[in-house]
Image 1 (spheres, rainbow, N blue to C red):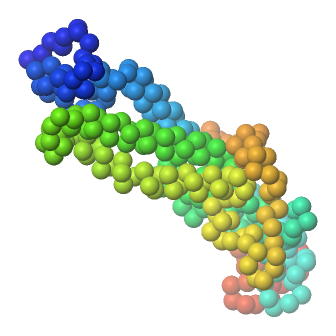
Image 2: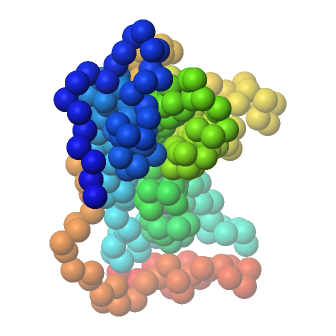
Image 3: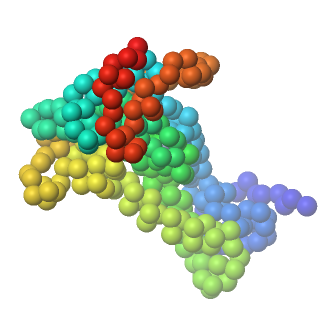
Length: 310
Ligand SMILES: [Zn+2]
Ligand SMILES: [Zn+2]
């Protein structure tokens, strides 16, 4: 049986919130949940704000999950063969394998490009190969198991919006639950209030333990955005001045917090390079000299044989 709620205003300043809170006024369903309670007692804006925040968080989460993070397509057999030939021409005079790094100058800073043996190409600056997705990802930040995707150049802004809005939502829910319990416990025993509203207590505990990690993550990524760094670079200490005794600075930083934030969060979004609807091409059309010449046994690759391949 659902009880009829009275039309009279429930807020009574003379009784300081106590009078309308009896179980005769609210049904049991309304007693235990924070949202209907606060909507009636304070303002309807509370569920509206919570709903807007919730849908914003969910849309950011889905965008992070389903946006291509900036995957670089692997080299085709011909491209890989041409590159391999180029590498062999430059460094086949010794027994050691040919150098698999290249150096480029970025804003006065020497940056090493590593060769990716899986994707058969030199990784562009800030690109890293994700072991989970098995792809090279541009401006690789990290692989996030929570969103089930890599976080890279094309979805970092959605990821940042997701954790930032999630921080606000968690803090908002936490504040609402605290307000609910405080209002309910006025004029009665606090422990009995907790017993009456087990759902709110559970919500309080979950929010309390999750808010620290979410706020910490948001703070960390705010620092990364402000200094135009990636998690990968920060963990590796790529631009740390202590690294190898050489003084190195982040060559991608614009030397201004505002410019860095604008560049990371509002910069142009490059188009996706992967063909989601395409068919996988069989890669056995041409014999790959890459495999046949891999110096697995420490033997010197035969230059004349390499030259014999198309
Ligand atoms: Zn790769
Ligand atoms: Zn990944």
